[in-house]
Image (cartoon, rainbow, N blue to C red; front, top):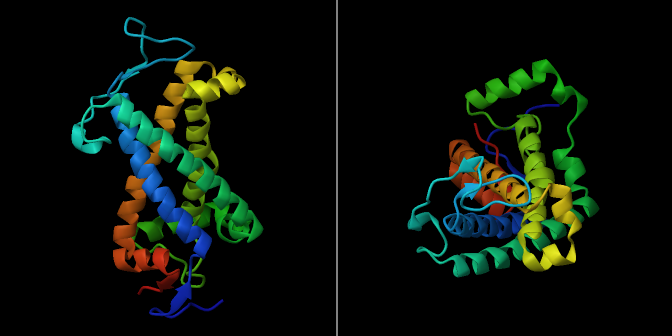
Length: 234
């Protein structure tokens, strides 16, 4: 294959991917902010079925300032309302995106990892390219690199479903309807701890993702996620 010349406009993201990206971005931001507000109500984390003030906790998270919580002041009731509403948006949005991506073969085209990509030589070359701020393959600029595939697959198929499942386990109504979820997760407090860990990793991914967008070219990356068209950089 020959290299695609810099300045070429390529189609990088389909409509379904772009719509889900922005819906998911809003949902994740609100969920993280409202989740921090909920965390401020009780900052200790436990394993097992039970956990309260005088029980041994495996971790105690810091109190988060009001400017990063939703709402911007302490209100457990409002934080829970924001969290529940956008949890529904996240869950059904993810389900719709996965169905569409299976039908239009987005997962097979974009996230499928080829055997050669897992070779030590390819992984090292991809890593060196990242250090040089080169994030695309000159011969196939519309495709994801290996680290993108691995990170997106981790978020799509592990962290987001895990956050949704543990969130369901923490809902009293869903807990009563599907009690087996708590048994699967090892108890209510275990579900809460796993939910916090998964949410923290999603937050970390978001920070890294935004940093790489800036390094790769903010306007070009934003345009590709709005119009679907991406300009091959130098």
